[in-house]
Length: 526
Picture 1 (cartoon, one colour):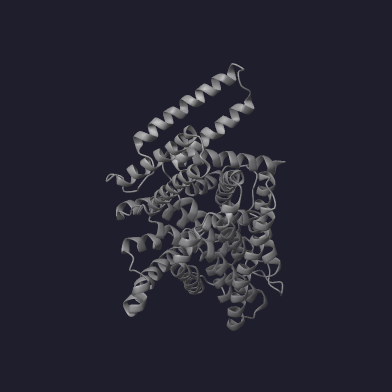
Picture 2 (picture 1 turned 90 degrees about the vertical axis):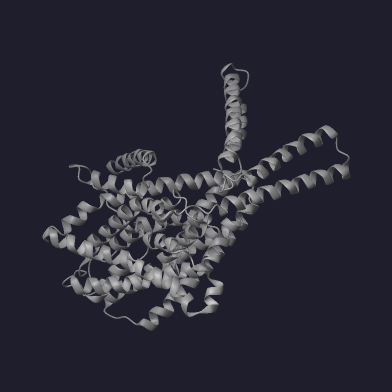
């Protein structure tokens, strides 16, 4: 009962902190971690421990799945080379450098345990990246690269982590076996994700019942992840692949299902994000208790050393890796345009770690096969927490400042594409109306009314496209939005007054209100 009350209180605290974060334009994962950290030092509060199996099997699938579901496959495919460059190359380099630094400067930490630490802290977190980036206006390609990297790199890090732990526990390791196993795990996870996505799509297309279809959507990430893990494949890649596949084919679902499913997944992501980030902050006292015999300043030096290594390796990797191939190969330059250095600095700085790293650290075995304690386990837990805190809080807070100082702005590509698509769709609809009028001799008053609605939309879109002071290409001008919002507000007041005077019932109110809500969502782009 205490645990249930604690969870409810934490969710309430998370909601309050998100309100504060939005008010002061602070990335909410940062404030949630700091809030959890502050709460953890309040005496006599019940301890909430982070169960790694709970994170991996209950929290991770529904957090990764919507990230894949709402990923643009086109943008992901176009940015595949830099995504893999970061998600595989950078993860392996970070793991290696961190392992060398940890083994060299932390006394008594063997190579296998040092590599386990390197694998744990090497992948930026998909949840943290999405939660912070979606509140910042950055160019579409940068967003695609960072989100794509964070979706794929967990698989690389977790496979490397498993081999490092196995080497530590059993005392044996083979690079050749590890390389072959990595390919099997990665490609097998992708293949299984496609199978699960295809089956889920087939089942949903047999139905026209939004609650049941959304339930199937909720079960899909768990099926993809658990089946992959039982088959010793990548559960992360399986879940992400299923999400990307179903996101691409979501156009075939009924409109009612799509609307409700999007709201459902937004709510699930918010609740899980809020809870998991605040629980991260709560873990420090337990971690410190295991190291109470160590000098505090030594721990601080180790934390700064590993955190700085993680941040610097990313910076060192991004710049040469971006520009060196273009300098050496003309063919590379033709296929990969040289990005501005400001954009690359942003990519290099956006390496926030999160829940996957901490869950992996907590899942380290307590003992080896011979019964001896796992070497340096307490150090690994502490250093992992410090890397998360440093990258999430320091980099997360400074990222908006860096974007402003560098003068990086949204290129407006997504808005322009949306506006052009709306314009072409409305023009096609007008052509259809004209053709249908000739073929079926429909009543003139019906044709005039429908045609007028589409012509008004086309005029509005063309006006937005022609505005020189509207570089983002927003669909609705401010004057148009204000007028429409005012009209929608009057409609709402009218139907509420009719309901309150018993002239209509609540069901009629809800139906009309839904149409008004959809109209408002179209105006705001939500």
